[in-house]
Length: 138
Image 1 (spheres, helix red, strand yellow):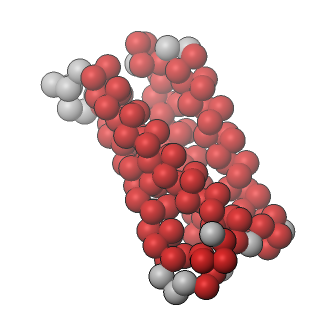
Image 2 (cartoon, one colour):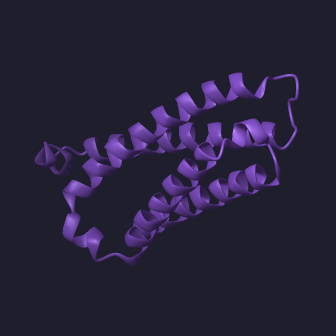
Image 3 (cartoon, one colour):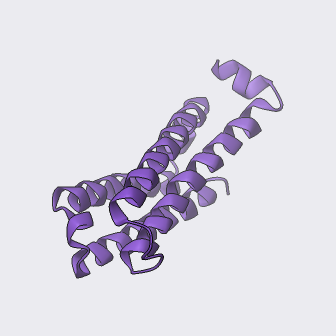
């Protein structure tokens, strides 16, 4: 499989497209939910939107993680020596911890200042993940 990714001219770019689609689904849905948490689109019920957005975001994360794992497998030594990659992995861990904290404290029920801080933090972390991902290529 990994040989096909390296020897077929279109395979790796196609994998990158899948990775980008996953990122778009993930971050786009988190931003939509964040807008609702900040009082936009008040006609949409928070819990219904959250269920839809988080389901799509998790699907996007699964796509990005699977495609990212395959991309990693094509050049693990180079990536493990790349500072941007290591920072990206740390940021992914931080994003996961923030999401766990957000849901563990019931932030969707509270929609308080801390929920807003957590949502803004989430968006900032994911933007930093994207930035590091692009930096890896250079």
